[in-house]
Image (cartoon, rainbow, N blue to C red):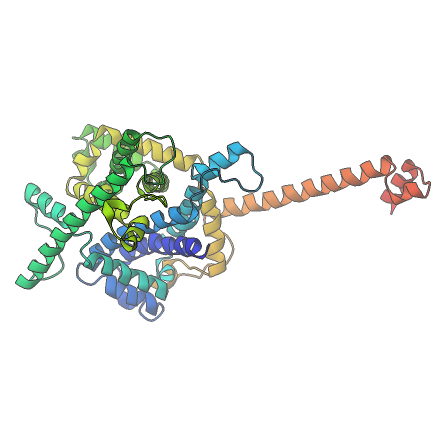
Length: 454
């Protein structure tokens, strides 16, 4: 229980923290150094040299690992049944993982993203975010994910464009250490694939019973491709958001996708729907790759029990997913955004994301974010940067007003419903002679008149 909710909280900090650090990058730190001292410490570390890129890479692995462990903590055992729910409800919410997915998306991701979008300074003004920054940088420095830099360098050679850096060229010693970590990362990635695929083939994962091995393997790679395209779409769309329309028109499929994504408030809706899709896929990948070794089964490749415990945490699946299903696709999309958006699948996937957001499946995030913002006291960045007037608890945006109106309407409806039920219960008891008045031989009609007169 404690681990589950701690990880949900940490996931929310990572999701909102990344947007905040990226958004605050161009802002002069002196403008908030006194009002938000911890935020200034976070940005001082994260914005130094190429640390922001390193933070994003380390944080991506941390997010995937946290999602995998959340799945491990909360995924239901076979035949689980709670709250005397009917079998179909247990299958729908527990066995399928839908309940876990909704909790993770709404409480661990979207709520934080909504509030951090315009309350960046307040959101990361905590030592827990500073801790998260250091952990993310440590993960990147470990070299686990350095194989992604090899992909980056290969695409740099293909495109002829140098890799942008805010730091001086590496010394000979630093270059040797860098390439050693790249080799170690490639070895770790290959070993992770070997262990994971071996477990899938031997049906030693948490994949649902009855699913054939070949289906699990096909689904595993298909989901990674799907997540990769989703990750790349976000990067590509932001890369072309300011591209002149006459340049995009020359690429009909990319232009069509951009017209759809940038129409009205579709971009924000797409980002929310995309988050839903990615998280669902991450849980499915975690289900396929998380190891579940039986008591009588041998350890994978005969490793020690201690190493098998490490495998069981989902660490290897997180390495594969972070590199193959996320970071590599982001590099391709950032190098060739228009070509990436010319993929005929992109338009359909944008439509899918818009449908998910429009379905209202995770609209609770807006309601929770609204009241979380009020109770925690989060203020928009313009309050501190532009000396704007502080926001009170009163709703300010049209969406906040809609939420308050809806909540008030719900209160009125349930109050009227309770009153109606109370009247029905009392009047029925009165006219069926099941009250104290009936015991005193007072006729129901007389009791009715006295009751309402009083």
